[in-house]
Every structure is written in structure tokens, then in C-alpha cells.
Length: 477
Image 1 (cartoon, helix red, strand yellow):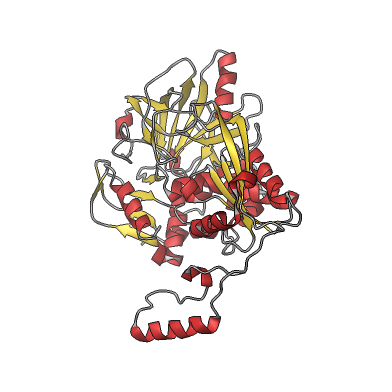
Image 2 (tube, helix red, strand yellow):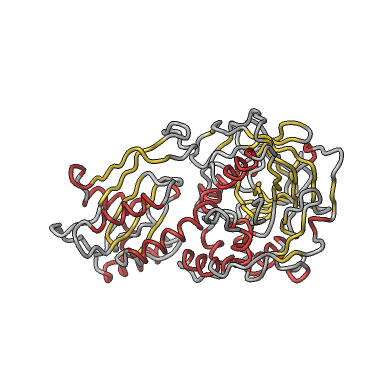
């Protein structure tokens, strides 16, 4: 096995070797050959159904001829380890490192410059896999598109799915209509195509930085440096001089033409639905940069934990920090995977009537993805859907505890919304309130200990002991 010391620490191969050495139980290597047609996704879904989310390393994938690594972000514990955060301190760990943002360091070369092709581009040679049966074809899911501001040179990073349109063209979608869309419109005003580079496979800190929520004109590459603990090492692309990670596996350089429209989609999106909603943009590839033995770093599509975590952790971290600063009574915030990006739970130690509503309105106003926020008391475990639903069923009265706001911007991929139109948003106050009456049913710890001892003697306790009344369907006051 290659040791982490054999690679630069900004190399994803350093991360993989180090993580495998420190947490071998959390890495699953598949030596047997698998298909490039949905097998990677099938492994992730099968393991998730068993409550498992290991980092996956596929050694032999027929049809593409390279190794595939996936599900890096499928576990929040693994993200905590990546960021050096203490267990349960994911948001705080991310924010602490992100605040240490530092400008990139330009270097002469790196692994991504080992092979540079500027003529006879043939995208059919790129390692790509099919994720879902309902997809239009093979897709790049880990395509981080980098563009630079024409005046300042500040970079913008964002994820965009892409499929092959022709020998040297990709069809992609800018459906989030974020900063890249704005840069494309600025290029349109000047009558020029927008130079971009698509990074496919880089250090996980770079990957998660690409999901950071920054103001227009701020540079996610600086955040990547903060998460790495040192400046991101970058090289310039040969045609447009865009600064891309020197230790990337693959980089495609070219332009997005604001005039061209091409067919793209459907693709299995974070909603769990196969979406053909697209801006139908064309990416003309003019340069391919790659390592000689490049591997495919793939992000699981659909409503996988990896897809959701990668897009959600930076946003959650910002929301938690802002809410706790403005509302000290907030004890926790959680975006459940069951709600994709559209639901959030907030735990509140409510100090005065109406405070939970104020907090929910703040969260609904700050996060443009959210449609529903449920507020509960601080003793409810918001990481468990069942506990939140219990609070909703016993503390909530629809006629008085619902707040609905209409006419706000919606997400283009929400199948219940109208394209890029508006959506309504809702807050559900499932806190007990000042006039609530009721005593929680409890079981003594002594009775639990007796039951556990008998079950152990019978060999009926296969996993962790029952040490929390929530595990037995009971609620703690």
C-alpha cells in the first residue's frame, strides 16, 4: 500500500492513504470487477440500507479502465475527521477553518500537468459512469466549474452536472443560477464566451470549499486554503491562465458559450427525482489536463447522503453560527436527509412566547433552499426524524402553530415548484409552549439495567446497550 508520505498533503491520494491507515474500518475496497453502468450507485444504496456509509474504492470498473473512489462525503463523522473537528462539532469545525481563508499559491507545475492535450480532444476517453437507469447517459457529477472575474481575477467555484454532447463538447446545467450564471451574463454583455475550467477530482477540502456560500467576488479557493491549513497550490491552464489545483486528477479547460443551447438531462438529482430541468448550456472543451494514471473521484448523485452532505455542510455551518449569534436560545440545527435540502429542524430553549416563530422566520429568510422549518424544544433529538415527528404529533396544533409565507424564490429542481418561479415556505412550531401540560412517561435506569442484563445472558443484545431511553421509544424530560 502506498503511504501518505509519498504524496503532497494537498493530493487526494495523500488523504486516501492517510485515512485508510487511520480508519481502515471505514474504507471498503472492492477488488472484484464491477460495471460502469449504475454499479457504484447500487453499492452506495445497498450499504446505506444497512446503515453503513464507508468510503468506497473500486479497483476495477469495466468500461472506463481506471479506479473509482466515491462516497467520501457519505459520512458526517468522516467530514469531521477531514476538518479535524471534535465529534459532534462539525459546524464549529468547518467555520473555524473557513475563517482562516488564505490566497492560493501559484506553482510551476503539478500532477495535473503531467499530460496536457490541446488538439484532437476526444471526451469519450474521459472516465465517466452512469449513476441511474433514468439518466440520459454517463454523467460527470463531481465537476467543479471554475471561472474568474474579468476585472479582479477572483475565482468562483460551483458544482455542475455534465454529459458528453459531442467529441469536444459537454452539455451542462447552471440551474442554480448563482454566481457562475452572473459571470456568464457579464461575458454576454461584452460579447464574449466565458472561459472556465472544470476540475474533476481534487483534495476533499477543495471539494467542500466549492460548496461554500460566499458573496459575489469572494474566492472559494481562499476557503480551500483555510480548510487545508495552507495556501491551495495552483497552476495556470495553458489557454486562459485560470488557476486550478496543481494536485487535481483531471481538469477540462474551455469556454461556455452563452448563445449555444443543447439538450441535457434527465439526471437523478438531490430531490430523489430524475430531473430534466436545465439551462442547457454548452461547454466547449479546448484543453484536457490530467495525471498519467488519473482516477475517477465520483460524487454519488440523487438524494444520497454524500450529495446532500457535500452541498449542505457549509450552508448548515453558516446558518447555525448566524442563528446562535442572533438567537442564543437556539441549541441545535439539523438538515435531515429525509428532507433533502428543503427541510430543517431547530431545537430551541424558548425564553418567551413567539421566540420559536421568530427563529423559524429567520432561518426561512436566510436559507433560500428551505421550504419547511420545524421548531422543537431543546430536549428533543433533532438528528432523529422519529423524535421530531413525536414532538410534532404531541405539541403541535395546526390552527395556531403554522406560519406560511408565499411568493418567495424557489429552487429550480424542486419538482413541486414551477421551474425558476416562486414557492411558499412554512414554519411549524412544535415546542411545548408556556401553557403545555403533561409529564413524560419514564422508565427507571434500574429497570433498564435489569432488562439489559437478562438480554445479555440470553445473547439477545447484539449491538450497543440500551443506555438512552430514546432508544426504547421513551422520551427524556
